Image: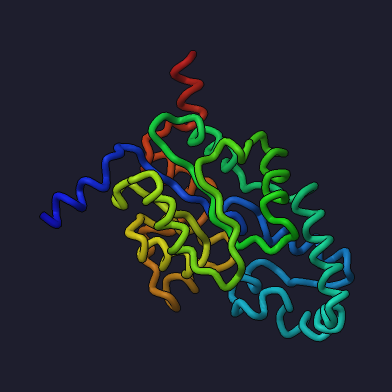
Length: 245
């Protein structure tokens, strides 16, 4: 009886993929670096940034920390930095290569639900992300699910909410991210994780410190896009062009 009741929940034959924003689809490091520079601060290089503990990612390393701390001290200073970061995201920040095409194809593909779950720290993040993605010809009002979380929120709850809303079997669900917390949330939700090591955490930190399986990690945006396309049976743009010729 319990088995039949469980199976009855998964009436849909659709698939679901949930994207992370910063560090997975959006080149957040470049946006942060630009923001810091405009306030006379330094974030350091990407390699050192990825190795820092979360608390110190936005304070810099040993070399950058003293100067950055002075400029970030006080509520007014932090507000100014966040204001600039919001402007940079809305007007300049870029998606990683291939991501815009991938997301447009997924949104248009039949039988695939697309969502975005993010802890983006800009002001009014939903508005920020709509403007950023619109610059890449992606209409976020056309996706099926979107959740903007606080830094303390766990992603596993909106992950479960999304798949339950559409009655999709967890085995047909995918979640993408660039941090161990994204991997853990995907596993806790019964979803397959697509993890990348070009965002906020590098490959060594993910595999050695947190024991994330190498098999689910993409080392470049191009590899990430290829993995997703393969899993969801989406032809690459060049394959479509060749077929149409």
